[in-house]
Length: 150
Ligand code: FES
Image (cartoon, rainbow, N blue to C red):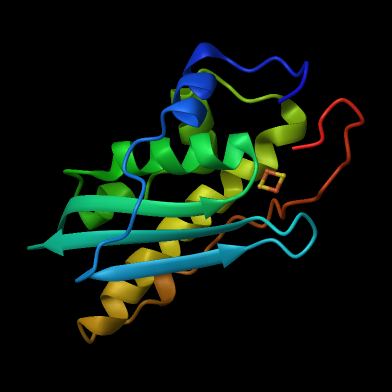
């Protein structure tokens, strides 16, 4: 990647991402992209009795976005919908041992993809998904760091 200071956990989740793939009979799917960097993330969740039993992702993006996706899918498994909603991009970055400030915006994609997957699940089960729409407006401002071409 670059000489940015990535934690060992970020590198581990980037090089060995967990839960890559798709869930064919997903209960909810969240699709999010950033028009500036072009990174896209798709998150699938399987929900039974309002508990998330499985989560997978496909991310075409930078290392921080891949590590974030991997961590979100790990964090969300076994959680209730209510608890999953509490997973913020900052909590994910923290679980990864931190992200360089210029890459914090990448973690926003993870939070948004999860919220959109939860909204999709609510919509599919005939409930109002408005509470799930992404709240984070820390909107992927893409500051180009010359040391980082990811
Ligand atoms: S998600 Fe766009 S650069 Fe990381």
